[in-house]
Image (cartoon, rainbow, N blue to C red; front, side, top):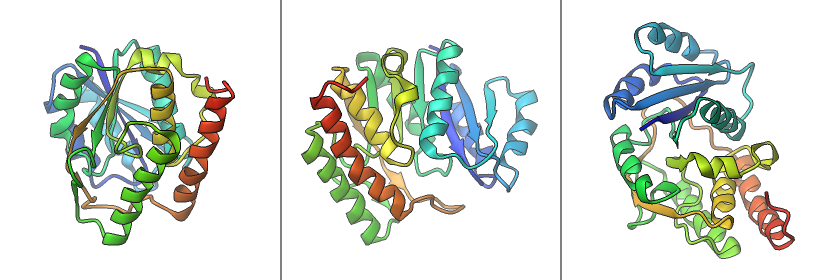
Length: 238
């Protein structure tokens, strides 16, 4: 197995050293790519300190805060260029439990995209304010209604791709950059007929640092689903 976990970071120095230890403990075949957007708190510097003693940790530094979607696209291109068969996404703040990584890797054996889902078995979110929970839950319903994707958690960011899924998508034509990026990648994979599976996870609100959620991110996602659907109907989705 050759698998890469991509973790975008911006001011995650409180989390990244312990997160790397736990992720790497999950499977000897796992490697990690940190995509850091020039974090003022020195996140990249901490990763550099770890790298000499841990060959499975890699770092991609970017000049500034350029967005979640573009961070993942940069990571995807890195993974494809290095020959990784399985490419995983996860957050840096422990909202995604690293101990669930083996479950994603087991499920991907029979699928092309596996999504760690907060909503596939009820609602499994810990420590979110009720307002944010309702926005997320009904946003997922909205996406399903407009796109007809059979995915209960289309905005989730804990997932595993086979490389052939990413190879089939023109990564230079990705339209979104915030959390809408997750919707778009799911939609493109689904529209191409890839096998998608959701597995239940428990999502826990970050213990350290600050959430990156904003009103702009929400509106981007609301607009994107219509755009994607029209492009699919017109045969313009690549």
